[in-house]
Structures are given as structure tokens and as C-alpha cells.
Image (tube, rainbow, N blue to C red; front, side, top):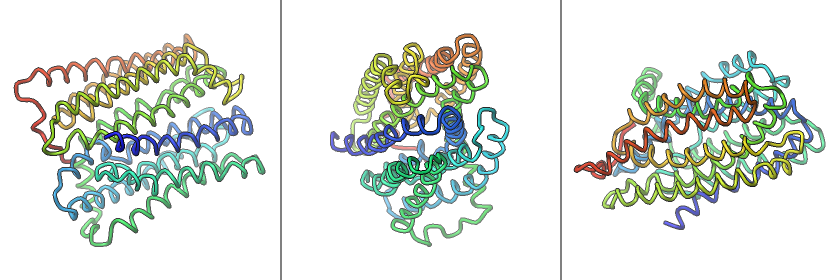
Length: 410
């Protein structure tokens, strides 16, 4: 188990280390206009990536883990790639339209390329590698191409001063890794019969898992867009700096959650004990992240992004609290409620958090700037956590525990 966590957690953290190296360069070479344009493009692309994913990262691992035949597993991946590719093609003009209406994107090409690069993450085979337990394939086909794009573009940015080279390299190498995986781990017969009408039916069948991930992801990806309209330019820059640290920390959350997702649902194991372990482990990670964000966030943002773009203590404090709550709901949602087929609870909690959190971000950002936006985000996450944790407590107390549920089908 320790080796499994180290493999799944260590690889994305390597990619985050590469981002740490590049972000200060972008902040200093591109200045506030490029900084804000990249942030807005990343936010739009992150929402698109979640829509493109169609819930496969949530429901796919359990479906693949429960399949006894390799051909069935590969068919799951083929269906996922075709349906996600269709959504990606549809999303590109919509992202351009959204960025065209967004203010603060004075460098439209930079924002658009960043949105496309971020959206292409929805095509990654990482969820399938998680389901099959192949962390090395995530490194080969997902992490290493992104690291190569991030590190390889540094001398080019210094030489030319052109920030758009970063999202362009990220887009090209990210797609290259995905297609490389398809070439080596799937063949033509896996895609047989996936005509356009079939693709539409498959997408419709994925609506439950897609609805949950879209609702959760859209809410998680909108803070920058919301604060952009409600706060001053200075407040937005400080908020973006804290949000960058928060997003990098989320890589650790995703890595630990992914490493445990298939493990908690394996056949012939004590599911309840494994899920309790996941809740304790992710809660511990969240608590540590909250402390680090609150105590070291202002100093780290000053060091990395410069004093003009640095985040203040309270913005970092509220982002740290949100980090803790997201860690908890990673376990309660994906490890407890989804395998127990209580997807409605996950969906309801996410919608409730968005309904409360988005207005809170708008109002508080207008009153308090970046600090208020971060507090509004935390308020929404508190509600999500409360609803999901109450449902998990009911599962623990139930006479017929959810441990008998081996998996879900997307």
C-alpha cells in the first residue's frame, strides 16, 4: 500500500514541482496581464476538462476494476476516449466564445491556448491507469509529457519573452502522450461499432456521473472567474497567487485519492476498514495542507511571484480551509458514497455547495476583495462536507453496510 501511494502520489507531485519552477518566470516575464490571462484561460479550460471527462474519473475505475476480462476493460477505455474526444471538439469554439466575453483577458491567444491545454487534460488515460493499477503508465504518457513541456519551454520564454509558448507546448505534448498511449494499449477492434448515434447514447448513459463531476468541477474552477468580476485588479492578482498554491496542493489530494480509489473497492477485502483508512489519511493530508497554506502561503507567494502579486494571510487561511474540506470530500464522495450507489447525495451536496458558495464569493469578494472570495469558497465547501459526512455516518451505522457493493457501472 505504501508503494502504491508513493507511486500515484509522487508522479503528479513531480509535475507540480515543474510548475513551481515555471510560475515565477511567467509572473516576472509576462507581468500582471499575462498572469491574469493565463489564470482565466486555465479556469475556463478546467471547466471544459471536467465536462469532457463525462464522469469517467469518478465512475470508470470501479467499472474497470469489476471487469474480469481484459477485452471488457479495453472496451471501457475505447468508449471513454471516443465520447471524450467528441466533447473536446465541441468545447473548443465554446471556450473561444467564453474567453471573448471575459474581461481581463488582454492577451486572448495566451488565454485561449491555456484553455485548450487545460481542456485536453480531460482526454488523459490517467483514470484508466488508476483503475488497472499502472502508475508507471501515468508517468510515461501523462506526467512526463507535461513536465517536458513545462521545463523545455523555460529557455524559450527567457529568449523570446513569449508566454504563449507555454500553453502551446503543454497542449501539443499532452495530446501526444494520450495518442501514444492509445497506440500502445488499444487497437482498432476495441473501437468497433462506435458510430455517432452510439456515441450519443453512451454520453446520455453517462449523465449521472458526468452531472456530479461537472457540478463539482465547475464550482471548484469558477473562483477566479467570479472574483475577476467582483474584486479589484490588485485583489484578483493576490487571489490568483493563493489559488495557484491551492491548485498545486490539490495535486496531492488527487494523487492520494486516486491511489486509494481502486484499493478501497477491491474484491475479497474489508471495504469498510479500507474506506475508514482513506478518510483518516485524506483528513490528515488536508489538515497538514491547511497549516502549511496559512503559515507559509504568504511567504511562498512573495518568494515565487513577487511582492506585487503576493497573497495575504487571510486569503491563504481560507484557501487552506477549503483544501482540508476538499480532502475530506474526496474520501466521502469517491470512496464511500459512489461505491455505495449514493450518487444522488454527492450530486445534491455539490449543487448545494455551489448554490451557497457562488453568491457568497460574489458578495464577499465585492466587500473584502480576494479574502472575501476565498472565504466564500470555504463556505460552500463547508456545506458540501457536512451533507456528505452525514451520509457517511448513516452508512457506518447501517446494518447492511455498503461494503457488499463491489463497484458501479458508468
